[in-house]
Length: 63
Image: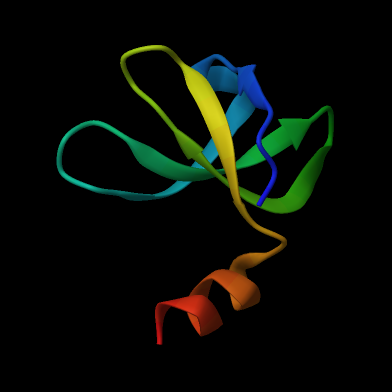
């Protein structure tokens, strides 16, 4: 798992799920492209933590 955190605005994220407390899973928007990596966006700090290389890996790790 990647340890680095990055601060992103809501406009820089494509949100795909939420946990009910404000934190959300997202893809990072990069201009006209979308990064395949999945991140957890923390609503308190607007920081992101890397979660998975792609949506398929995230789903496989939930099993």
